Length: 101
Image 1: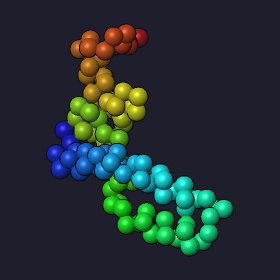
Image 2: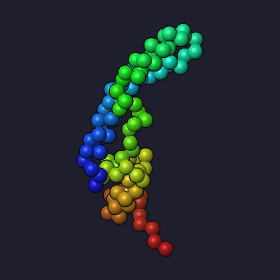
Image 3: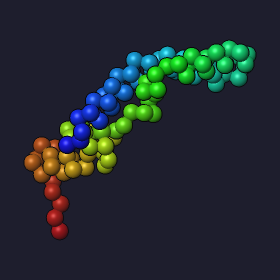
Image 4: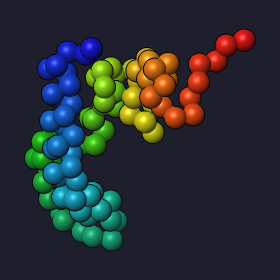
């Protein structure tokens, strides 16, 4: 089990990134638009930099939904490899069987 503080910090980042997603997208479009004047783009860049750092999507860590483990996480399932193996052995994932040879 991961540290509870790390899990909570990541959950806070997820909430912030969802809250500021549209605002960031709008400002980024203005900054990247070469047709606009340099002053407009610069003002948009300043507004973007005043938003909280943790509101950026890049800062969100992929963590296991069960254990909070940050490494070895399958994106599609949002479960770590260890939790996936455990659930597979318990028969809780349909179609997954333990391999043996």
